[in-house]
Image (cartoon, rainbow, N blue to C red; front, side, top):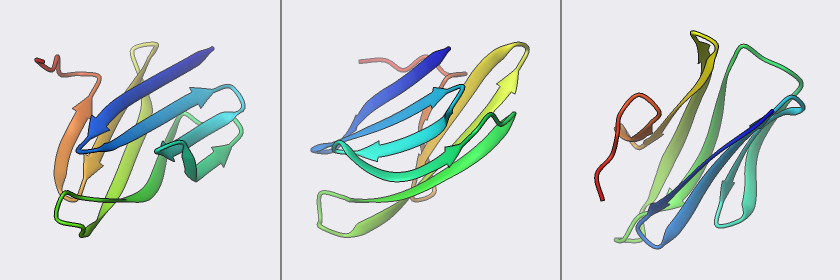
Length: 89
């Protein structure tokens, strides 16, 4: 089992991976946080620079819901990705 969520944030790429070995958060290919082992839910944390050059916090929430892995990614206080929401364009 391997789930990957990848999105663009400004000029950056945020990628979250979940496998049976654990979860990982990458920004522009650089590992920022990881949890090893199998978890029913977990949180990952990182940082990214916005278009103004200011550092913003990344928070990732991963969990199980009805036999499906759910992932939500926040930058600052804003939800930028959710497996529950279909994003346009």
